[in-house]
Length: 468
Image (cartoon, rainbow, N blue to C red):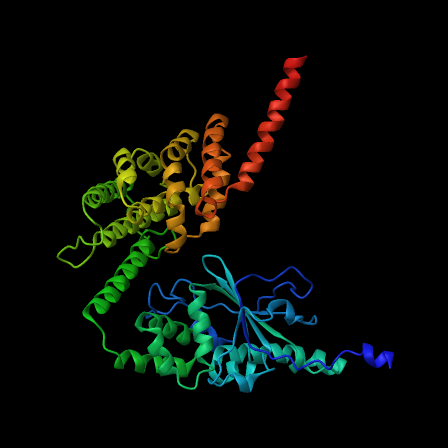
């Protein structure tokens, strides 16, 4: 009787669902070393840059698709990746219920700009809809089959892990996988919209999701496009293609390098100065008028034109960094007194664009892509550190491809290379901002702790010497 009283009630069958997690894998024995395996030749065409890929899409011509099968001989503990209720997406009435309990594939998506997304899904669905995933799952099972036969285990109970690195947009890739479970893809695309459908089309083509490609094409052909949408997409594609072409021509490994003269450094800096002058004119205009209302004959608002100039400057800066010619740009940017004065009187929704240029320089210094004199680093921080603190919240909300963690790490590392007196001033300014605004300010706590310990030790040594 006592035993029966202690007996636990029969456990209800756990209802599995589509699971996604924005966090990375927790350190545990179930996360073994990743083993990269070359795909079969039939998938090579989709792992190479496509000439007709859409620039700026989730998997553009630069990132490509390079899948990695993860060795998962150890027993899976999928509970560590599932929340009880939160973080799970179950689409009722869309064909998901029939795959309950069959989620035996774990997709580990790695963002190109940082971040990760873990999706658990059904191998049956992936095999039926994607030729790329079908080949990877088949390869995984063939490799596991011999081991399972010897041990008498069923390989179908094993969790297949597939890693997809360098994903441009994690959300779009997830939406594409979700469409595989939809009975009516077109109906879902109506809710998604034109721009998202174009991105999904690119991902679908990359993973050979034929049904998704045809549905996106039918939707884009049937949906009415406005002139503004067509012009915006055409302009963005043309700019990105031109940037890639010019950057390729200037690249040291370019096939066009033979018998070509050296890149003229002075000409590039003349163009940079022209862009900075145009940016100053636009900011002066923004300080006198509402940036949202000011529209030119081309139909572009003042914010769009300022953003365009900043994109041009960052593009030129990337070329200078690739050619190891960016040292003089540090001095040029630190001497922009007019831009600094206008930064104080301009709306935050406009002025944060200036900090995008500073962020590019900080990251280049922190990652050692840019080497410059100590005086140049000190001048850059003296001029643009305070604006960066003021604009960091806007940069977080409007990243535009900026890796915020890399920016914080680079700022901290570069700060520690400055003269001690300037380190004290800047760290105290950061501490006041951080204690007041919290996450709206860059997290430099690690660098601050290093500076604090160094200062404490140096102060103790000085006191010991003086006391002798």
